Amino acid sequence: MQTDEQIVGSTRSAKQTSRQNVCILGATGSIGESTLKVLTLHSDQYHVFALSGHSRLDQLAELCAKYRPTYVAVPADKGDAFAKDLRHRFPDVEIPTILEGELGLKQIASHPDVNVVMAAIVGAAGLEPTLAAVQAGKRVLLANKEALVMAGNLFMDCVRRSGAMLLPVDSEHNAIFQCLPSDYFQTTERFQNQSSRAGVSQILLTASGGPFRQFDLQQLEQVTPEQACKHPNWVMGQKISVDSATLMNKGLELIEACHLFDLPPERVTVVVHPQSIIHSLVQYVDGSTLAQMGNPDMCTPIAHALAWPKRIDAGVAPLDLFQVATLQFEKPDEVRFPCIRLAREAMQAGGTTPTVLNAANEVAVAAFLAKKIKFCEIPRIIESVITQLPMTPARDLATILHYDTTARQIAGSLL
Image (cartoon, rainbow, N blue to C red):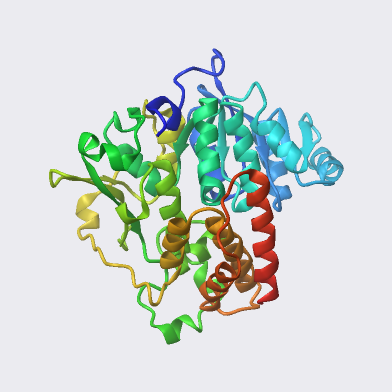
């Protein structure tokens, strides 16, 4: 298992400068927006050095005008149009160096002047740029859970070799990190062989239950993309909102937790907690259970990961327990929401199966958002694709990417 300095990173500073240079992969998404809020609060400590965007290039241009990054990465063949638009709309703004495509993402993620990389690209598209940041030994704030779902063992091996600083930004994994003992990562043994020393018995991964927590199967068959994208507690993008509605988001987070904290899936339990006040818990062998609590705002885990081991203001209101008053906990219903089961089984199978799970889910969710399939068809398609692609050892990135492509082709044929 990785050492403390490797999972949460090397204690070295990338550059002894007055401000840390930050690269945000996925700057126009909800995590990117929250990251910029935190950085703005601490502009004396952090500098927006590089940004990337994909579909919301108008918004990316506005961010360039506001934060004046040195580099910006846009989709392939969009660089000239982006520069022209930026020059037209903001004539007084110096045009940043514009890089294109996946190569551009890798270049800004691994740039020698970058200290911190926020990995917030949604889905499989974030794997290779995030891996590039890890290989370059950066402080990586990990919001792209798919990188670990697709290539968990390869990814964590790279963290160990490079000495990169890996800090979880998903609210649940950030909460777990805060609740673990300070020496948890200092052993070279796997969790199963050192649980008595660490005293950790299991992790409780909380889930809001999504907008359809109380729907029956008949009601679930009729839900619309518009309904699925209205999360009761969090402000998120469309894809992650649908994942939260199917509970696949929690399944992906279960796989992520297993890799981050070196745990077998049977020691990660999903708990439905509708209020989203407790972000996750760690249980110990002495009967203690530690929980991290706070208002549901992604600025909190972002600020924690950005400044760790220090703490900085996240711009989030403190939790008012008198206003919260009641906290509820339920077991997830895996009959109505089978995606948790599918994810757990994929993690148990190992190899390329989590990659296949993720790819099939991305295709199915996109089809649901395009109103090509019904909500309940999402897990059916995923299970069918997994059945058609038996597990193969995930020996290298090429194998992982091959199975990602193949799974997407099979999923597409099932629509």
